[in-house]
Length: 177
Image (cartoon, rainbow, N blue to C red):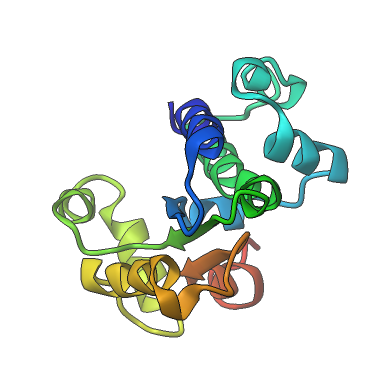
């Protein structure tokens, strides 16, 4: 639902968004940890109409390795259309951006930290440059910037705010061995 739902909402909002309007899509740091896609796959995720999106070859059974891979594809597919839609929305005088948060201490994250994956989450936090998870207020502050007048020059962007977890995943102690 992540991938399809976001695509559908962006298409419909893009048809009616008023001049001066702004939208923020909440994606995820997980989409940034997905390995590189081909230029064709990136374009397909960014531009395929919602009603055709789930038929893409890259999203078919046998091509998606597991539930984590599916989630990463969905979250990459939530952020890539922001760039494509920014072009269309700009013609209407509107803006669109994404925020890709990492571990944000919400009630859901607290439950996850206490669950079977909690050790992995704690390890990600401990080995990240920030050494902590984020807060909803921090995400809200970035959202307020992107939606408000101080963010009027920002469109088509995806703001990765994960305390450096993704940096550590690619270049630090979280890098796959």
